[in-house]
Image 1 (cartoon, rainbow, N blue to C red):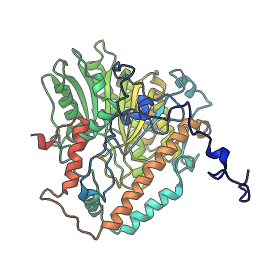
Image 2 (cartoon, one colour):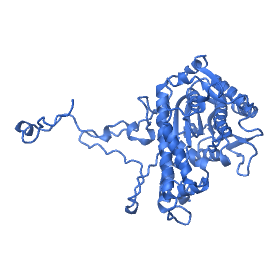
Image 3 (tube, rainbow, N blue to C red):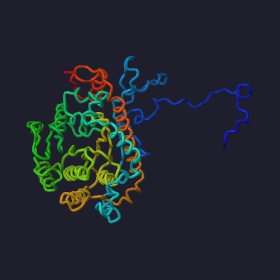
Image 4 (cartoon, rainbow, N blue to C red):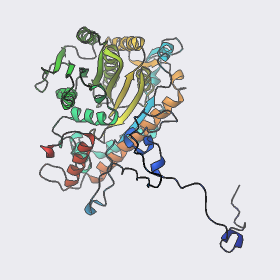
Amino acid sequence: MPFDENEPLFTDEDPQYRDTPLTSSIPPPSLATLPRIIRNPRGRSNHNSGQQPYPQQPPPQQQLPPSAPVPPPPPPAFVQQTQQEAQKPAVDLIARHLSVINNTHGPSFVEQLSSSKWSRMMSVQEGPGGRQVDGRLCDPKLLQSIGLVKTSLSLSRVQIAHVSDNIGPYAAVLQSSTLKNASAVTLGHLDYLLQPVREYIKAGKLLRYVDLGSVGCGYSNYIRWKVDQQKDCSGSRGWYFASGALDSSTSSFDGENKLDLFEAAGGILDPADIKAFVTRVRDSADDGHNGVDLVVGELGSGHGGSIDAETQHYGYTIAQAVIALRVLRRGGTFVFKAFEATTPLSAELLFLIHACFERVAIVRSFVSSPISSERFVVCNHLIADPTWVAAHLLSALTKMHANQYQISHLVSWTQLSGEKQFIEQLLHSNMAIGRMQIQALNAVAAHREKQQSSDASGYSEHQIKVANMCLRHWGLPTASNQ
């Protein structure tokens, strides 16, 4: 009903209104009465669309007498700033972005994907739209704005990264940890959020994992460090895939934390090397365990806009997924790095992977550069038989490797675009990460001429404080504790 400015309003001049007691039998809302999943940022599920969030073990409840007051909820995980830092925004210790997509179809849905209704591999010549930005996945204007800001900066990548480090509150996280490796610190952050490693560290058990090309064996180094924290664990057994010649920073492990190095002459995009690596892992890991617990992948690059670079981007993700689906045991977890999910092809690839797992989480880590589109995908708990999906992806990779044609679609985009919950959550994630990226780029543009005060290490006191608080909050070692 439209507002009528001539309609009399209830005011204190009205005796009946003035004498009406303002009481209610319903108590006011309290944070203490909210479910734990809402109050606890570690368990939250961004943009969950009514689906069930992560299953959580409720904390033991203390029995209070009827007259005892309800204890206040725990404070949020934010850095407490000094008066001099009042102009700086509050710093979150959880994640830049976390979006969870639950598998609502169940394990048997993979069988439907193999039907002619879904399975539809197409080349660029047959359907070029698969490699173009789709408005159902991200606003094209946002991506155009990101490109325009990058162009207007007129700075090299090194200069942009330098300015970003000067103004980014999380820039010192990597250097403040004794792990001293971006891959190791990133996996530690993901482990704090979603426990892809901690879940499989158990008393008397051997953790089996695959490290797909992390720089300097960073993922393996974190896993070894984490396993060593659990004194009654039986250690770890890892397999490292090196795409090309091994560098001096890569070394094998022995003792309770053994790491087997595999040097692939042709690289991970070569189906022959993939098959050889899978065979090696299976032959040595399937001793009654039916596969490994965890696959973590880092191979690939987010730079370059050419067709070749774009093809390699898709190829790296496909190759890592093939290996993961062929060596993981039931209940295992797959973690990989991605740079975009705004085209039908990238969405189709993620959907095929997502169909095999209980849930998929898209994380924007604090360790990643805020000016990049980098994100990490954590696929928890393999629940479906991945045989067909792995074979389908390997077929696509084989055609790409043989230069038969450029893959444009892996499944029917018409069918997938009808998966409203999946598409909407992917749209939400892409838009959130895109806004963060352009905000960071605009900050670089605004500060490129300004000199930031810093200590001898190159980072400000505030950045070091934030870094140490983040690392302690995530349970990672800090240099200040040494």
